[in-house]
Image 1 (cartoon, rainbow, N blue to C red):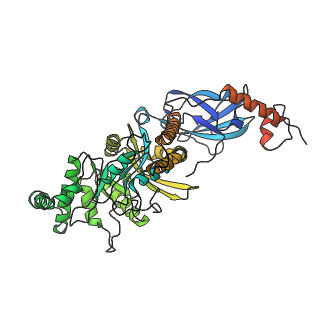
Image 2: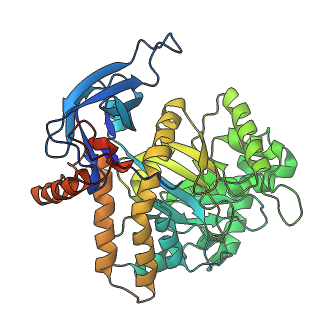
Length: 471
């Protein structure tokens, strides 16, 4: 969703719970520098607090603060983990609402990352150049993506070579989509340091021998005979993924094939999920809504039996006009934005699957995962990721231009620096840029011009400060 233009920003927007934080309200544009020496009122509401009245709330708290150098600073302790609403008032008139999220130490220490672990390029059955795919993902605000071309691991290396030596803001997660000969069960391999598909593509006889001698005998007795071959090949593939250091994701069981049937039916989907062999389930993937609904239903049923498999959301993008891109994705919480840390976060269940509907002007999100992560992800999807996308757009465009020789790496890296500044300010890692003396003097000069002119709606803020002339 495109972010609403704001007159003011608040930093940091994510804070530690139960620890006093110094908050700063800054102008988003010069004309909105706060009035030095003037008192402003703030109303603070814990959204998940205990309120007993609809119309006469007892839990709201009010404080005042005096602006200095065009900025309003105040200290506050945000209790518990959750969302907090702050309203800024001047002369008892509300100027803007802000939303803050407070986190306990463990989650506060992690970086929220938006990504896609399943996508394709022209090197298999997609329609875009691999390096261009990377740029398109960044333009849409993604922090990471995996190029998982069918039975092809190497196209990811093409991206690395294109941008070699360039500091990018987006991480390419290693990957491929594998489906052994004779099996319709697809497996998304992400994070591993070598290809699994190459083993059966270039050593087919060895693959067949291993299936017959090592894996068919290991198929559990409760698996019906008709699934034995596919189950054995899935076990083989997952073992090879783990040997490569990757994660095995079970994707899109309700994808409709050329045969007009689901590629994996209900019974076999349940067997595969309950087997425990997979590291994650692509709950939201390259399927129509009916398929996602079925995934939700069967996920709920296997959870009731004690199966608690981590979740991811993916686009399975083949063409950029595909309805699933950028509407289906993962939000994960990792120590760093790099391959191994992202894999560790997903494996630990620190991810949610996201399904978006609507237009870029009015987007609605459905998040699936634990209540704690879903609650935080919903806040980020409303207040963090839309602005991040705006900052990232130039970076993605510059990446694609660079791949075609149209610009240099300095343009990309300059855009990356802006992105990092936005993130660091939002999460309180660094101080935001403050209005300097020249900026304040510039605004003071033009405010005098405004105050001495006729009263207009925009000038109404000056009323009570020897306001503009009435005409």
